[in-house]
Length: 338
Image 1 (cartoon, rainbow, N blue to C red):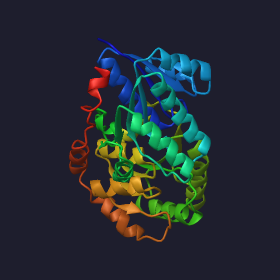
Image 2 (image 1 turned 120 degrees about the vertical axis):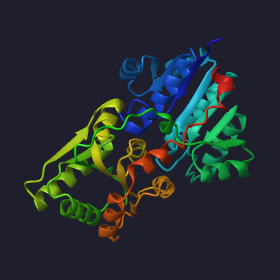
Image 3 (image 1 turned 180 degrees about the vertical axis):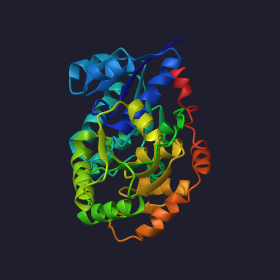
């Protein structure tokens, strides 16, 4: 018997990682014959791209009615339940969960990272809604330990994007660089990175990836200008505003990937591309350590010769083998969606 499932998350913002997660969830739900609805900032685009019913995220009436017509709410993935971005953001995603719980719908917390929670009020809100959820899965050990301390029964899962079936492409000898703006970003890092890339790959094309244009594009443009100031002849292109599948297709033809965002590193690994991670967040550090790929800090004072040498010595087959050992576990969720 098919279910009606509504999905709540950071959707409709043209963010590659979140779009990839949504694609995984939608594909799984449709394969089971379920009816799918998505709460989105851009309902028309989400509806068209994923072939689902979609409602405007800040239209209370639309969201209320969509939840009332559903059997199950899936909240996630990503870091929705945190107040570091803003308390309003936490309140919004918590309210969606609370509404579903108040209407006696089944609630699944899907592969989320919980926190940081800086306010006591935030902790109270999240604790209450998670204690009432039917199934809670988290993507990292820190979230798991936090929820255990609250008495919330949670399951640790791999990132859902690991379950994508991807086909490695033929390398075109291009170097990929994926950057995002962040509070710890510095000119020292950008200049050191540009200098090393031009030293290691003097005649290669450099593709600079903006996974979320509203956040990434300016820093990518700045990096391109630094490269061209150092070598006016360098062949560069900023890649942005593509669909999830088109981004993956472009990445599949890279020779190397130097990346900040978690899902940029993950996709490169899934495609067997030799990768150098830039540590802006602990989740990137953990992934790099697990996959045994080199990592740079945001300080710009690392041994860049060593880091690039380690990247070049990576074995593509071993990267693929690693990525294939991280499938997403649907077993805890299946009773609610099948």
